[in-house]
Amino acid sequence: MSKGPDFSFEIQLGGRVAGVDEVGRGPLAGPVMAAAVILDADNIPEGLNDSKKLSGKRRDALAEQLRECALVSIGEASVEEIEQINILQASLLAMRRAVEALPVLPDHLLIDGKFAPKGINTPMTPLIKGDSRSLSIAAASIVAKVARDARMCALAQQYPGYGWDKNAGYPTKQHREALIALGPTPVHRRTFKTVHNILYQDKSATS
Image 1 (cartoon, rainbow, N blue to C red):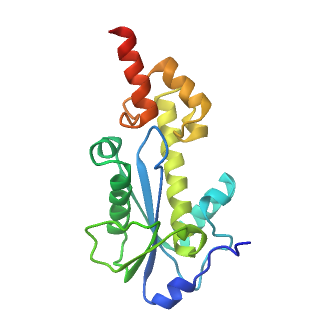
Image 2 (cartoon, rainbow, N blue to C red):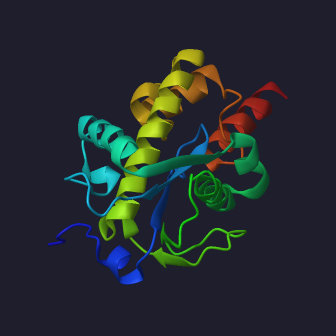
Image 3 (spheres, helix red, strand yellow):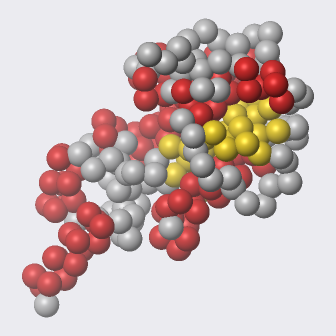
């Protein structure tokens, strides 16, 4: 059984290490968002873990703590950018923007996953399942998830009926049914197969 993330990568690298993670590659709607976090080695909140392994209440509390005791930044890529350059490249773009938004220049980046964003001169180490291995990446996963959930709740007010305040834009049964009944919104990702197929069926039915 995994013992959860620790600070060993950060200690080994030394200097200011930023953990970077993204959230929102799978949803049918909304932006993809990323966070970069530089932890204070002497003041690390207890309970940091992969955001998917934490309750919403716990994530919110930890994100608030992190904003107080760590250097935190957010980056995002819009639905338009996702459509233009694909979701993987948009995720990496959001990561780059998060790093660029940090108030200080990190000495090293720990990136969740196997791909590293381009256009950053800072040395980087991609870590597969990094949010379960590095506390800095776990912290970034929490901050990114909380920020994106808040964005989707705001978009749910603007576009009611899709349940984004609960499903964050992921393709749940409710979301798919609403997509068929109500049609896509301006923030739906039209290049995603589920959305594309519904659009295509609608056009076929009306042609």
